[in-house]
Image (cartoon, rainbow, N blue to C red; front, side, top):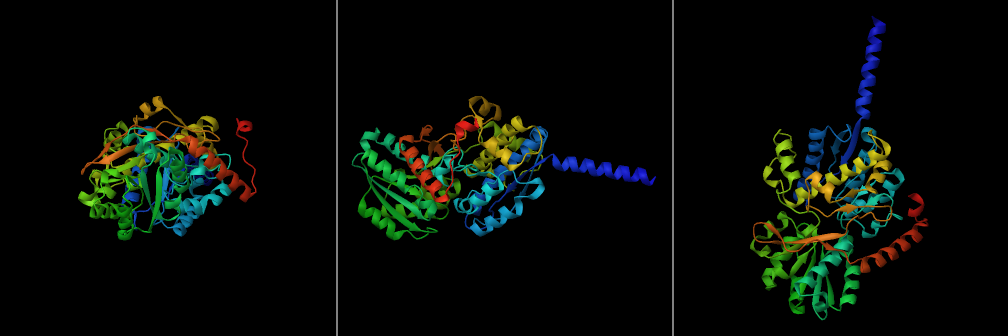
Length: 435
């Protein structure tokens, strides 16, 4: 009897070990408290909802269940590093991290490379990480800040009837006083030189609640357009300040982190007509969003307490983040097998994504975000931006997908990568040899 009991116990332990090994762990370094909690809660809520949807619909990926654990960063660099260290080796090891924070990403990049864990910096982080020869473990998927900056100028060109008509125009770049805010200055300078418009940079000290002197300066300058590079409380403060000085909101074009319902609603009437970029469209018209609501929330397992936030800008961005994470796991399984994969294997999956029109239709995300195809040297995989306008209640598309001006971005990326590799005394990867 004792031998039988031991055998049964060992068998149960073996089964438990197999079950545990069959899980794919995805850390969730979220921020649901603090100054940026509103957007963070919806973003990570959408991401978690998608992971649960895949588990409920398919039993995971290739039979491997997706598991996750949240860690609150409060959007602070030190807390983000703590979360990275706490979660990186949990439950068999982290698949990948998405901090949705440029600062935390910079603070963990060297650690992630050493630990061989990919960082997914979808629509944020350092733009030159597009070049996988230097940044093997960083993936600014869909569109980087630099790509978006060139798309913003091209959108203004569409507004004035052609890029040639930008010559002589006056544009102000109103930016958040941080590394994030300053990221696109060299790109905008290059675009101004290329197209002959006058560019003036105006800094707003973080967090951006006080902007009276900056908008008085803008009123004196009388620009044709204002490019707004904002985040959090800076956005509604900018729109209200623009209203006070009489600057037309339809001539303000923001980046995507200034373009959510939270940003516009907080500004009230001052936001009407305001335009912002987007890399993932909002709305419930997409089959994937409808299926999540039906499957996950229908079973009472939704991550958000208020279903009214489903389909909002930040929620849909979170769903897209989940899709890219899962598709990277699928791609990696095709090479390494349907089993629990380590971070380095999933890094290969991120580097070999191919979400084309057919795959988008299968996923129920046609036109929700641009098609994505990555490679060893191209960790961005797209480079397209679309623009939307706030009508007082909803965001409405006002452009198609605009491709980055690579004639501007690629030389800047090369120069930055060359400098980075010299500073690090590193040899760039030979992508041709790795094929």
